[in-house]
Amino acid sequence: MFQRLRAFFGKTSALLPQALDTDNIPQHIAIIMDGNGRWAKNRGLPRIAGHHSGMKTVKRITMAADRLGVKYLTLYAFSTENWKRPKAEVEFLMKLPQQFLSIELKELIENNVQVRMMGYKEDLPSHTLEAVEEAVRQTAGNTGLVLNFALNYGSRKEMIGAVRQISEAVQAGRLAPQDIEDSHLAEHLLSAGIPDPDLLIRTSGELRLSNFMLWQLAYSEMWFTDVYWPEFTEEHFHDAVREYQRRARRYGGL
Image (cartoon, rainbow, N blue to C red; front, side, top):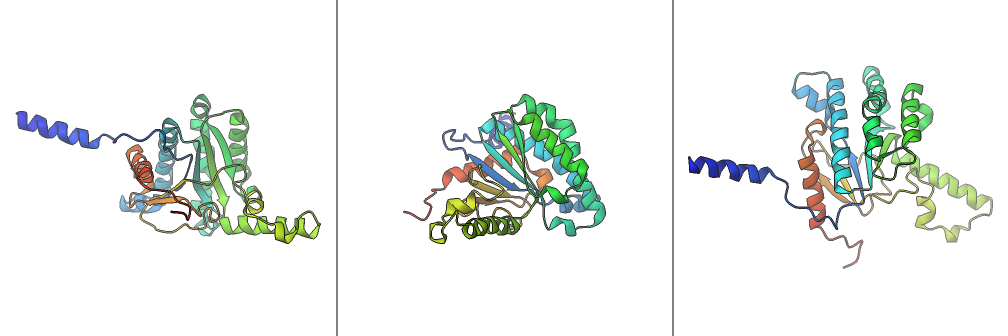
């Protein structure tokens, strides 16, 4: 009997998250939420079922980040390349922001979360854009976690746009070419005003950036997991932060 009790409590304690250093929490965490479709396929379900389940993970991880004291959480919700997917899947994905915010906005407000969007609005359906903009408006005065949705976002397009704006400033005589610095490009990116991510998380086992925040991730720590996004838990999130805390960030120095 005592052996069984020891085995039980030993297993239970192993499941408990180890203590995290509250003085070394990443200020900004970015996540490529990947694997919804494969998660659904493995269960004999349509891909849209995976996207619907992944929406629940967004809520779970947003609250986990808020509890840890993360200041910015950027979620790669839809890329400029995702329009190539089947029409029915794209239409479903465009309904998810409206569904998510209609259910969760009240609790986000209660938790002092501020919603933002980083992406190109012109291609989004009106119902998608209206839902996101309403959430942005209602949470604009909140001072807690910034939940930043990268929606219809592509980093190469973003950087080309920034270069064009800088070129226009040079042509107009407002900026000399020899005076162009990192800060000039950064202030013309869609992420202007948000610090670069300290930590990037990607789920599902893929080991690439997929046109996500290519400039901003230059010195971010990266953490990859085989876990599909619908299965990604608060414990996995803690594992990523714990690994981040083990690393020394030298930014090219010693």
